[in-house]
Length: 360
Image (cartoon, rainbow, N blue to C red; front, side, top):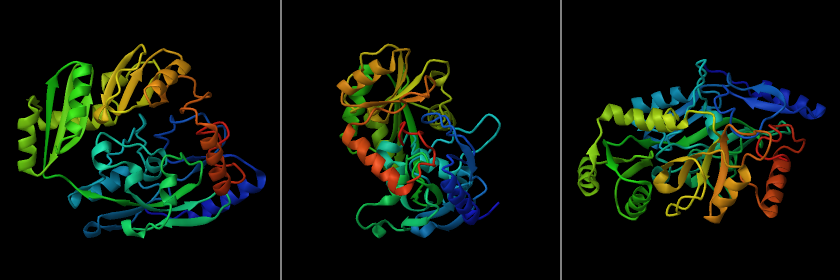
């Protein structure tokens, strides 16, 4: 159901600013596990919903923050288009559906991220409600509209700490004509070597994953290019239905057995060619080796230290102590910059306080 709650949300934030009342921005709560725990009054934005414009010929869709992600994807599919960054939904057990605002605020991207762009790459513009109660618009609906620093992309991954996303404009892409998935039997070292080698070649890769036993490769594009790539890569073909379930459900939505259990789940960002960190636990690798999921009981300090040695950073994605450091600690100069940006958009510190870092 379409509804514009801009005025109501604006009044609520202005009142909270006067009282210095902290607010937790909440859509459907599908990404509420991300970041640090927040003690604040809920600011519900899920009813601020509706697709505002969709121009298939222009490859642009604009919708309000509470619009269900599934509704947007369905509209795009009818026109043979898609959200290229394959955002995870993480729908709740009670049926709560992911919203566009939560998707962009979380800044998460799916299996295609290294090959088709991230959420941040595909945001064209936003309308945002700041902690002052001001409605500001950044960017637009065309790529050439960007002049200077693109503030709209600053909102991606900010977890609502800079403002409430009201509307978002996204670039969309045509769905590929052909998609094929192959699997190869190999060990972790062999998987990393293959993924690194393939990334340097003109192959129509749109996803890779090593699940501990097998290397999965997805190829998408024109029929001839995909078939030629399949011959070069080799491996065993996966039935289309099973392949779709693997990339969508098991990997993107984290329903693979790897993601089950009580051990803390770490998201490691590493150079693609980096060796395995000296850490205990089991690992699942995607994004050509750039993103590695770790299930480990090692202390947070040890995890971050070992990952930093390899030029990466570590995020406590699920489980563990959510009151402590969840994201990789920032150098002092970057933390100072973060604080200045936070102060500019939310001078009273009322929006999702502490969600990213204790002082943000």
